[in-house]
Image 1 (cartoon, rainbow, N blue to C red):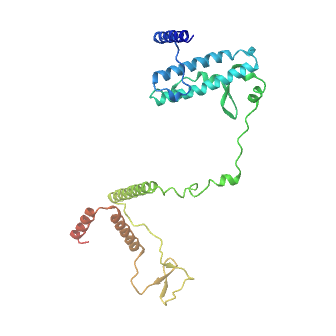
Image 2: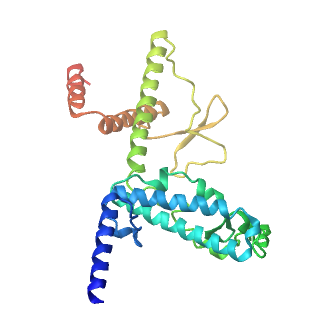
Image 3: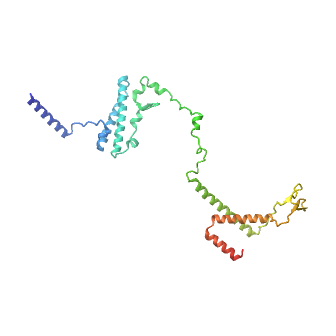
Length: 281
């Protein structure tokens, strides 16, 4: 008996070896996708899973299979979809294409998810099963509205724009724009002044006399007052007092000096001083 059993096992081993050599024995799909180390085989198992999903999706369209068979088919389809995702991730790890992004979504679009229950889909006749149809008919609840206290939690100094200059980007841009605007304004003023001088229209405009005092104003220091031609009382000072035009000219000179010191280079300042020396200014 032992001899016969040994002969039978030897014959079976030879038969199995012959089938393997001829390629007639089908290789089983690994239970875990991480066990596969070759990209072509991973592609092969993915295609096999897609074929199984397609067959089961076609079967589940038949409402005459019965409630229990339809539920089992729907569970099997969802399980195969998850397995397909594992194999697609493994293919990406092995250097293959990213099917999650570029792959067809026809099988996924066949199913329908219940609002609020993401991940599990119902296919074919499973969408019309008792208890499932009502889930699709219900409208999803609107998102809860935030109360005023919750909204105020997100409001801080940055919300009002007080931290816009903390990143150090806005302030240099503002300074550069300010310099540009000032330079354009100065250039425009110079061009207009030169144009008026060329036309001989530079005339002193009659300004309001800021030194005129009214009748109710008095000289607290004992100065002498007299009535002018315009009916206003004028104050006669005992010390030299600059006129309004002289004050404005001094202010203009000081403003020009500040602009030159701020925007002009050292070479330009030296040339300006040399020119003043030559002109005796």
